[in-house]
Length: 125
Image (tube, rainbow, N blue to C red):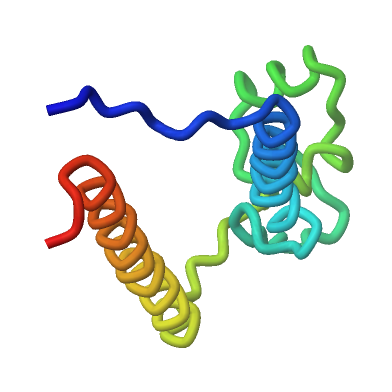
């Protein structure tokens, strides 16, 4: 039986493949940031005339903030920031559909390529 020789890919095709993968990778990382979908939502509690005591900071903590150059006014947003833990069933359903759809697509594509390799190596039945 002959040793399997995969088809050769030209240098231009390799370059196009690399560029497409690079654009997809950067897009997958940048697009959620651009659309505001990355990271957790932060909710700030407003405090009128903030002091270290009204922000719940003891003298040691206040001293550390002051050593970093913060005042009670400038540190108020940092200290009162809280994560928004709201949940969306619609977002969960969309994510499940996307993940399952991707899995099914990969199974179908893998089966097609697997059958092509077997046919190329062993011939048609």
